[in-house]
Image (cartoon, rainbow over all chains, first blue to last red; front, side, top):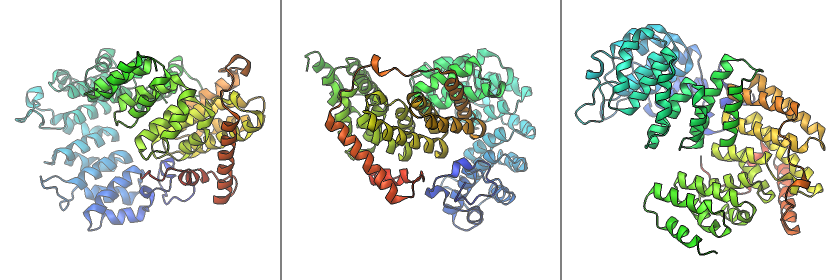
Length: 282
Length: 273
């Protein structure tokens, strides 16, 4: 592909337009990440993840950024650490796992959330015990804090990561969250339980959520069903009252699961049915 | 306008909440009456996605009579309204929307607009075209769709381009076997190499359906004749030629990048990504 500056970018199709976003080079981005300007550092961390730059230098610079102390928000958060963790989750290099596990103890909620998500996508089972430790105290410890909105930990990210990591040893810890007062956490628990047990009762909980009253909850259920690739949900997804683009992404998840199970050029009846639904939503 | 339409229009104008508005627009759209066109078009600029979707569906249902008003809407400097109008044009498939869809599929800022336009380029009402114009129009559509299939960075837009190419292939099959061969080799490349598995699966399906001769387009004898006037066709021809001339000025023949430049030149300057 012409005009790109990425040697080891694994997904070149993402960088084929001459937009401002791709005008950095890998060298510049890494230099920016190690430089003094907090705005440029924050952007460089995002950029390396967005364009899948998984070079050893990029990974090393991002891991260093997980311990950054200079970029702070007024509330004491660590914006650079959050972005670095998100980027590392996309780059697929398990060298980052120990540093991301340390981030689970960071006092910034959003750093813990980004780290839990990244650990889920890196698929390294070393992350399972520290993630399970955050569920200590069970449902009682996970009740909303004083303001009724905030939680002690990023439980949704933790539950989903344990599901992705196939942490069957965590089932007893996850199951109580099906009764959490927050619906979003119930969905996260259902998604994880389905991933760990393949029992349709959990996925059907998400299908029911597609006909709920609130748009944000319907959107969340769409994303969860797409993530677990639950084929029987196809028609319900297509009929959900939500944006076509979100329904298409969810159906894409179902389709890709089918293609994983039955490789091309064979197309299962289910795959054909899913594509017929997608065609109508374009 | 029939009297039954007035209360429905008033309900749209007086809606007090987003969900009330969506419901009122749905009820108005369901009439399918031409008298609802101005109100449905006004809804496109209300910044209410649910209502806009219902209005777009209503306008597609009405079809050809809504096209002049939709084209007028494209001249307004409201990007959101513009993008909904393009989606309605894509759904209607009226030839007067062709040049708009060519520009939108290849260069619009919003991926949902590129997606709808790419699909719409396949389902254009080709049987309405006079023979001499059909060739240049289909060639432009083919080039635009091949460009989108090869170059768009969003999986969903490439997916829509495949759907467009598959429909176009069935429309051009007899007249231009070499075009059909181009489409088939593009589909084969995408089946093997696209970065998205969903896109690969759809390309594979399109190949299989084209080989099996599924999805045969209606023959001109069984569908309604073109309602377009000679002046309409002249305008379409003029804009297509203008588009081709600008392409040659901007880039060498065969360079697909010209579409993005060209679309900017012919009227999307208010878009700031």
